[in-house]
Amino acid sequence: MEEEKPAQWIEILQSGKVELMMGMMDREYNQKYDQMKQEMKKQRGLNHIFQQRDFMGYTRAIMAMEDEIVYLLTQQLTSQA
Image (tube, rainbow, N blue to C red; front, side, top):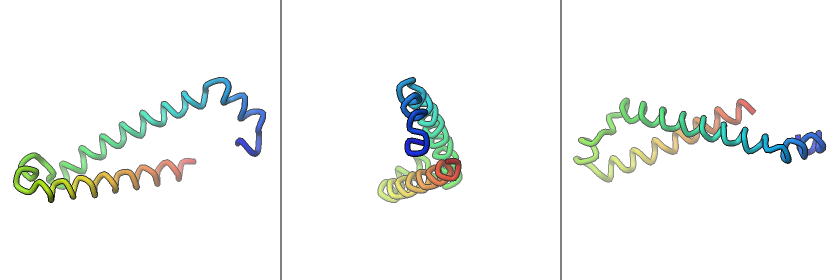
């Protein structure tokens, strides 16, 4: 939009609508992230018992899961754009 309609882009920037839209997107992203994380932890059995038995394995599994969630959400956001 910045290149195609510079006057409208400047108007949107000055009106504060961009910050509002970005805030809404950020809240939606964070909500989806938290929901996906809780669901995946439950599905994969990543609970406090597993954490106590194998802390390093649990940590690696959580990190891999978080990377997967970021990838999936990024795919969703770019396909919507």
